[in-house]
Amino acid sequence: KPTVAIVGRPNVGKSTIFNRIVGERISIVEDIPGVTRDRIYSSGEWLNQHFNLIDTGGIEISDAPFMTQIREQAEIAIDEADVIIFMTNGREGLTTADEQVAKILYRSHKPVVVAVNKVDNPDMRENLYDFYALGFGEPVPISGSHGLGLGDLLDLVIANFPKREEQEYDEDIIKFSLIGRPNVGKSSLVNALLGEDRVIVSDIAGTTRDAIDTPYTYDGKDYVIIDTAGMRKKGKVYETTEKYSVLRALRAIERSDVVLVVINGEEGIIEQDKKIAGYAHEAGRAIVIVVNKWDAVDKDDKTMKEFEQKIRDHFLFLDYAPIVFLSAKTKRRIHTLIPKIELASENHSMRVVTTVLNDVVMDAVAMNPTPTDKGQRLKIYYATQVAIKPPTFVIFVNDPELLHFSYKRFLENRIRDAFGFEGTPIKIIARPRK
Ligand code: GDP
Image (cartoon, rainbow, N blue to C red; front, side, top):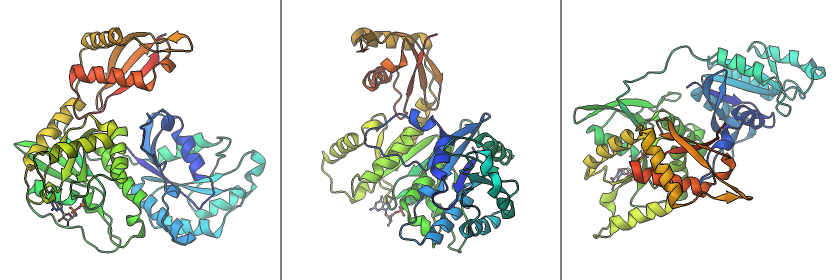
């Protein structure tokens, strides 16, 4: 999927446009208690073309002066995006800050589309002509608050999408990535798997590295490791900002079949782990939880069970994810990892038989009657699996509003009990029967 980034100085309306483009997609995402969502990264669609969208304005480089902030955000856009939306403010006209941003963008050779925001009606177009001087072609007048001009803007954006396809692998090659906060041992684990020390990314200023795809063979089967650990670019301010590392993780998750959520067994679980795991869950990827540095933990025969319980308590929404305890350093138990990846991946693309699915759902309803709301009872007519990766089920009902979270969760658990699905989230969508 191509990536689009929105840049521009503060208050030109980047977030408004971001939300407009993302539209209802953000609100239909299931709410997970305890997981905060950063609204800097989401996906959008225009004319059947799907893309990722980044609001660089949401990535604050702490304590940096105004111009540094904008410059760093522009750099992020250049690194991450295939097409850049450069937002300006039509009421204020062209400013020095706009020109500064433009200078950075010139060097990138990435396609840039200039959006002139706050042009709420045609009378306000007089400033528009100044923006031609930026040299990025015809500026597009838009109004974030009125939702005008967005179609024209997106037409131009998708016209600039790269033609080449991203490197693709055989269907049966499992792609997996390792996510987790710094120092949990992601890099060490990749090294341990590969059985050699990889070449470390060069520190030359300005070296740009994307995620490195490393082929990996285990037991005669091919895998691809999507390695974010090697992507650190030393000396860039934004590298240390949390939201930026989240963004990197999200990009890796996006391309993976299976995501390894790596936790430091020595330190335990902190809030940031939860957040990162939440993203993998929301993205619908298969998940294996890896507790690393298990060598450094003082253990008795209960320690593992206790740690497992702690994980279950903290990651309520990941109750389906298998947990692997290992040490990247000593390589103990490292052989238990790949079978779990296999299992999670297999379940991620499992298809169930429709008649069996309906038996399971009807049995569930018989066991625990559907809820009523405002005097109306939920009626379930029929269920069918509509997709894999993750397995997605549509349930036809009298009124989707009546399928509350708790009942949906109950159905999910019944389906899991019947079919397994260890290692993969499943999605249930209610649709009204016509
Ligand atoms: P990353 O930031 O997640 O990629 O973490 P690194 O792989 O760079 O590891 C961070 C630190 O943890 C390094 O000092 C490693 O040597 C150490 N480390 C990694 N794995 C283990 C492990 O299994 N046991 C112990 N004791 N230390 C580890």
